[in-house]
Length: 64
Image (cartoon, rainbow, N blue to C red):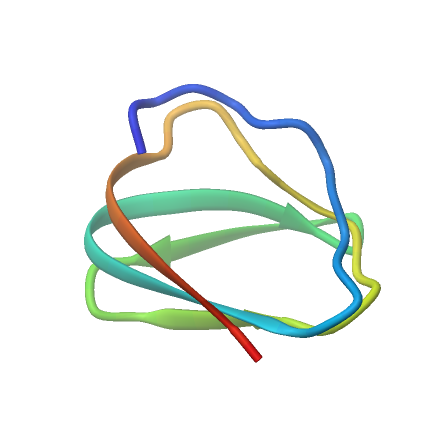
């Protein structure tokens, strides 16, 4: 993550977002969420989500 925002999207399957280092600033289902180093966040299938500006670090995305 380089600090840039990304447009809103949704997927047919759930995805798990694991922050290896830094902070992921996310909007999911209309709520703002910060996911920090060592934390995971699961975006359920069909949920609109977007990366907010200021997200920096390393993110691993696991599709289920």
